[in-house]
Each structure stands twice: as C-alpha cells, then as structure tokens.
Length: 253
Length: 73
Image 1 (cartoon, each protein chain N blue to C red):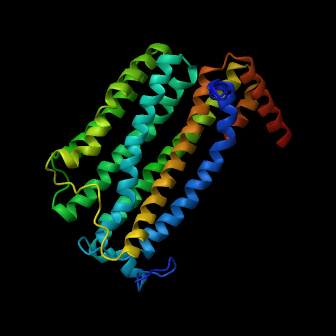
Image 2 (cartoon, rainbow over the protein chains, first blue to last red; image 1 turned 90 degrees about the vertical axis):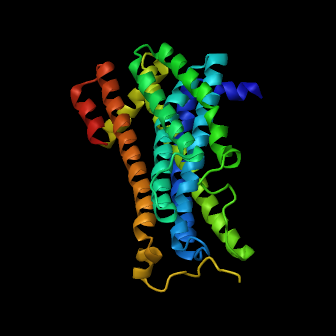
C-alpha cells in the first residue's frame, strides 16, 4: 500500500499524474460552478431574514472553507516534507499558498460586502473576522518568506515552520463564533422555513464548495507541474519529456 | 412546498439584477471572486509558458523553437 503513495512522491510520476488530472478537475469545477450558481442565484427562494442579500453565502462560505482547508493541506505537506524529506512536499506547499491567499482575501472581501448591508459596517474587530485576517497574513507571510530565501531547501524549511505553526489558527477561526460573543453569525445558517427549501440552499452551497475543491485541485496540479520544471531541470526524464514535447510541436507546425 | 430545480425564482431579468436592492453587494461578491480566480488562472498559464521557454534555453535548443513555446501560450 505504502509503495503506491511513495510512487507518486517522485516528482517524475507526480508530473505525469497531474498532467492527466488537471484538465478533468478544471472541467468538473466548471460544471459544478454552473450547477451551484444556477441553484443559488436563480432557483433558491428569498431568505426570510436577509432578503436576497443572503445569496452572498453561496460564494462566501465556500471560499472561507477553502481558505482553511488549503492551510491545513499546507501543514500536512510540511509535516510530510520534514518527516520523509520528499521533494514533492515542498513543491505542493508552495503550489497551494497562492490559491489559499486568494481564498482568504475573497473571504474577507465577500464578508465585507455582506457585512455592510446586514450589519451596517464593512469591518469589525470581531473574533471571526480578525482570525481570518490573521490567516490571510499567514499566507502572505509564507509567500514573502519563501520567496525571500534563495536556497530552495532553506526556504522550504522556513515555510514548513510557518505552515505548521499557523495551523493552530484554523480551529480558532472555525470555533471563534462559539468561543466568543461575535457579531458574525453562527455556523448553522438559518436556512428559512420549509425543509425542501433548506435542502435546496444547502445543495447550492455544497455544489459551490465542491466546485472550489475541484478548482483548487486543478490549479495546484497545474502549478506544481511548473515547479517541477523549475526544480528538476537537471534530471534526465525531464529533458526527455521536453524533447518529446518539442517534437510534437515541430510536427504540428 | 416542493421546489423544482427548474423553477425560476425571478419574474424578470431586471429583478434578477437588482437582487431585491442588494445587487451591488451580491454581484460585487460574485464578480470579485470570478475576477480574482481569472487573474490566478492567467498568471499560472503565463508562468507555465515562461518556464517552458526557459527550459528550451537551458537545454540550448534553438531560439526559434523557444519562441514557438512562447507563442503557443
């Protein structure tokens, strides 16, 4: 069993795997987003308390979930990298960070756009909002730190440290609405009256979340291929692959 | 009340865009998200093609072919 996992820890094999997988993930992301947007923006009924403004939930909650999941994934790969010294781990952490930073930024932006009409303010220093802002800074800090260190191995080790220590912030974000008295609404969103409506809204939200999962996989597979090209350029397999690509290109001309 | 997934909540297109007065906030959220993700995709594609061109130079393949990799992007 272990053999299979470590087989893909070799950049050469993971490169082939991600080349196959990213287009499928991208296609899945597109289809799921269309379904989710259709249900969330066109079919779902009005919310009893927040009117039509509640529809921000269909983007705000999925991007916020992903911002947390991606950070945990970075923590996971960092632990893998420090434990097993696999070259792929550092690349995965590196490939995940920009997408996580974007989702954290979107969580804050869509949250502000939701807060203004519902609370009357773009921003409050509330536990949920502040801890999400810290998450955004952790992503930015990771990117700044790893790009400031020229030596790849040292950069990876420093980045792994930020990723692992920062993971402590994720449960804080998640439980902040329980632990502290916050302005932010609780985890169970008031999904209006009848159960069939609640189910429909929940489905819209889950479809959007699944779409962002697929998007994240696609962009991370795509980006990690780029990192493999950068870091494995001295290896023979990569030169072989590249020459084949070249031949295909020449044949197509 | 059972809702079909084909039953449209809105009675007109302008109502859809207005979002019950929350249009700016709702559309602002969705469009900002779409925009940032599009920028990310364009950026990733550019990085990939730049990397291919760099590789062509590193492997000392001729300039013309390196340029083709760039143009294919």
